[in-house]
Length: 404
Image (cartoon, rainbow, N blue to C red; front, side, top):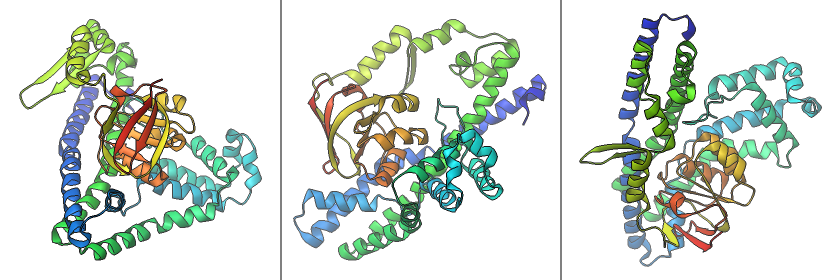
């Protein structure tokens, strides 16, 4: 849709329609987060019960290994589906020397059949590099760069394709063997069925969220172009403030600047609070920082087993993670999104404040085979850049070994 060709009344109508659709979408998918918490506990309790019944006493490591298996989705993630298609293109590209040229030149000289497949990837996965703040859509040049890295790498492309093609088969096989070993009952089968469906819903929701955010950003850019207000101001507005701005041309810049300085939004069973400036800092400290000054270790949900020690890099955006995380570091974030992937590939472990066993960080960490603990709540508030920490994802603990 060419937004610049719309009359003002049409722009208002289309913007409001998008806002209402996104509001409904987020409301209808909110249960995914709630189910993460409840379902994980139910699955843990049931697995403990079945293991006690079958083996009596059992080692924590044995439980964690089995729990990691049952919380690994059978369906391939969007990340793996995309990776498989890129690998296939790399394998089918006969003129490998072409990739020694600059990527812009490669694009022009790429065989027609390969170029068609790359365009297909863009059409299918253009949104995968987006986040709530990252607006750069995945393009043909990015795919050429990825294909170059694959061909110039030391790993076997054929082996990687085989592993990804067989992923679902082997995970399903291992789960069936575990079900037989522990005699899974109807209750456990029911939990697993729900888990598998919601693991897919997680990916579907993320796609919807990123596409919706991209659409909303296009409207904000158009509003900025028409009425002269900076895009970076408009992103701090509520939708009804954008609607009012289109109608009247007015906007509260003082309030926007206060939000930029500091903003705190809290929803409880009793009330909804929002504060800006000094009041926001005060309420944030009251709600989030109390009692964590002396914390040297904390727990979370095991998402991918393993145990490593490394330097913490605390990141609040994907670009920050890409710039800060070096090979061997431990990525610490509130949550991760698809655009965090390059940083996650360099990290030896991932720790997040939010999420459950079907969140992005959990699924990707299992696929990358790096330790991951999610749902820690206080990781980004407790840890500082350069802290030497131990991530024991066999027991779900994070320990500060030495402060930076």
